[in-house]
Length: 84
Image (tube, rainbow, N blue to C red):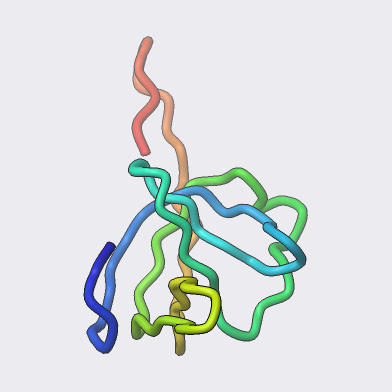
């Protein structure tokens, strides 16, 4: 996990976890998006890019992204490969 207090850039899958919007990275790290209760239905399980300020909830040791900018990544099919 990345050190709190810095701007973080990451890609992962949009998930709703325990009533909150979260990003799950390829390393199975979970980052919650501050102020979001969940994703729109068409965003769930889709690849996204998130940029924001990393913070930690020290009480329950959860990584939170504040002031997040979120972008849905489009999938393109190139012959037999899927490119994200």
